[in-house]
Amino acid sequence: MLNFVEFLEEAGFDPYPYAGRSMYGKQCVAVTASSFGRFFADILLTVESIGSESLEDLASIFEGMKWDNMGYDFVFYFPQIKWDSNEAHGDESEDEDGVSLREVDDLEADEAYEDS
Image 1 (spheres, rainbow, N blue to C red):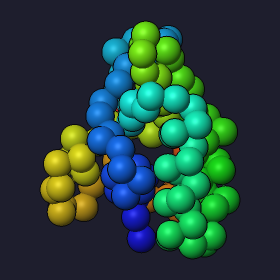
Image 2 (image 1 turned 135 degrees about the vertical axis):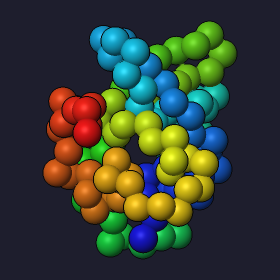
Image 3 (image 1 turned 180 degrees about the vertical axis):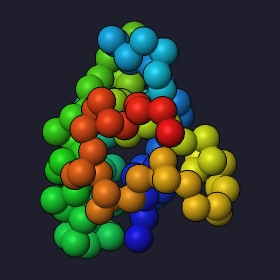
């Protein structure tokens, strides 16, 4: 099963760490797109390709999504999903911070940033 970073990569995005408003330097998963329409079109096409099994999990993730306008582009970020540099760089080790689409509905924004 794809984790959320892999899902975003499958959708054609290049996820990166981002510290949004009121996050006080804590980093979460983010992507950049030229418009809301382009972002959601790519997400919907990817959902269609992976099947509806993960639809509820994705809906939970997108409920917590935030965005900022960066001039020409938008940054879409997910404060409830802590940026995991091991996951982002393809480290195959088991890491409790890795988030699969199935695990996301159990997360709350405060829990995602608790120190291990």
